[in-house]
Length: 281
Figure 1 (cartoon, rainbow, N blue to C red):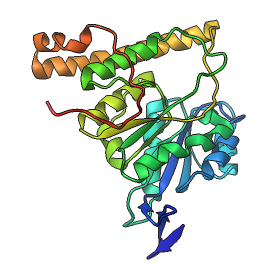
Figure 2 (figure 1 turned 180 degrees about the horizontal axis):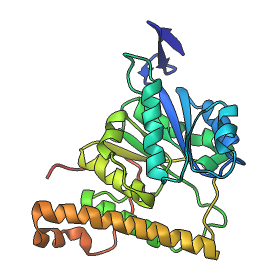
Figure 3 (figure 1 turned 90 degrees about the vertical axis):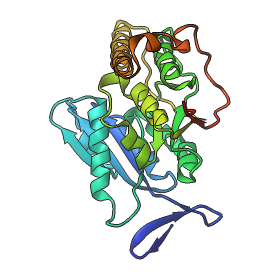
């Protein structure tokens, strides 16, 4: 780490300049995990700021996050993940030194705990300009339920609109340049935020790369509560797809939209993790 002209400047081991990183963590009722998530994220390379957005918690999430070293912001009522992400990004902008380059944005879930330290591989490709956005591919999580309906819906939507077949379309662990983030705002509401974000970034002709990361987090099981959670996820992703489809129909006409080749057949996800940019039409 070095400072030039009073501004933070970060360098790699070979002397290459890289942008500073701000971690944004949306959180609701996460007082048991947020401290370890924040402390582990502080050790990530290039991290200058951690913002925890308490999205209407009924517990002490905000104060625990502050005690662990984060900037704590609270929504008095639950406004949803997308709103918490936007609030966090706005707070980062307010904390950036005047005249400095924008921070990279690293979005992490609040329940990662100590495994948030595994986010370093997400930062490197974006910090060095190899990709505009990285998305974490998590290892199989013990106890996870579901049959992949939500993931497949999201994957098919991304394939339909961009031609890309992601492995982890619903992963919320992402590092973005400010340009990539701005391409996606306003963020889609609910659980459709990741699907819409991926589509928006690629349609701006920016690059996305999936990166395997050894994260561990709380999973949705096959309990009744887990099934209800996945149902809400499916509905939100479906709403996102319908909204995007409506815009597409308005732009190119219903017949051309329905003839899109990705409507037929199940796309197989890519597994090479190479950066992807939507090809020009």
